[in-house]
Length: 607
Ligand code: M6R
Image (tube, rainbow, N blue to C red):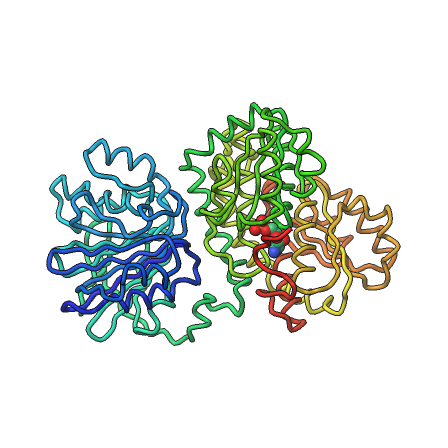
């Protein structure tokens, strides 16, 4: 997740060290490249590159940079590989303006072409540069700077925050759409950032601009205007009282809980990104003509692959082989060829098991594509192309937001492969309110709201148990596996995920009085789940059912955790949220740190 920071003072100052310190405070968001620009007396000094803050700062002597205004940016690659030219900030064609953004401008590819056709110098593939040229376009057409910014806002689609300054000026200008941005007001300076932590050591007086507003920052004042009519909006500063650590965690006690709550927003951003991605259609074509289609991953990413395979069959009538990466090498690699397509799924893009499978597949000439969160990772470089998951940095070891965005991507691809407009493919209720896929973020928010208190209570009730099961069927089977993995990973209890119908083939003998069994019930599978519930209930089990409201499930299960109504595939996806919360609360109740479970690391680069 990129981060921006801007700083305005009255006179020229040594801004380099202020920018480096602010960049350091943004690093927790995750990044691959760093840049800084200062503006003073008609001149812009720009230094940037791929690497860590301290390394780039040392290499380019950023500490010596002086100016009256400064911008720093940490880049988490989405559009364009990590490289010096794609690093931010960016200049306009003539080097009169400099700007940087965080987030994603999803129509940047089209805009870049328009800008080049209009004669502008476009130097990178990065969407941050698109934002600068979007302003330049209207300056060239004769608009005043503030109006050029207002018009640029209308052209730039996506979720982002953007700051820009002119060499020959004394101000910075900023706006945001769908993404966060905070303005700081200090003694003799003003500043802005993607989030609070980079501002807090400087000032606690802040303004939080809204979408559709443009902020102008002078050294001693801030002005907020409406994009729509250019009129000034009165906005009083507020005083922030939280501690730095709490602010970094977004006010949540752990990163895991913060990341669980971020899922709706990152899903929103991902859907926008996929809508604008030039890579989706070529991938669809490749998959259509493939002899066999493999989805390959490990751990949580494998569960997403499994969910994807169910969606592809149910929605597009396309069989997919989901497979754990090491088993792919043993079971399928000897038989694959150039007619086959593999999608390699990985949050980190560095999992050795996945990279080994990729190598084995490539040796056989298979077409290999990726789905990864860390753009610039080995997987993104080694595949023909890799769709980004667009989640930003996932700090907590248990994967949460990256899992849901992997599943959302597969759902999106399944509809596109089906060749149906998602709005007509998803059933009646979706027709009333546009594409069903667009409703996922809101449904996620509703789910968390609906289930949170009940899940906390259930966590307390079953916390003494060190043995559990999590059962699902069809689209909810991968979700049950994922719920069980989360529970194992951070509670250290044994929790097995299983196909509900398999339970009677052996594990049933483990059931004793109070034994907790979670059922994830899809709307079409209720009768099947009910027989599973009764099988274990008569043997004393405590049954916790995650499902949409259903009187039959209410009558049969001990606890019904109700999630919002939606289509079966979306419903399955939503069901993972209560399971993530259950594992989180049980972990905390046991006195563990869910962010850093023992024996595990975020990225497994070993065999
Ligand atoms: O980075 P990857 O998605 O390739 O990682 C694969 C697994 O190691 C990972 O999903 C692991 O299972 C998670 N920590 C689960 O929360």
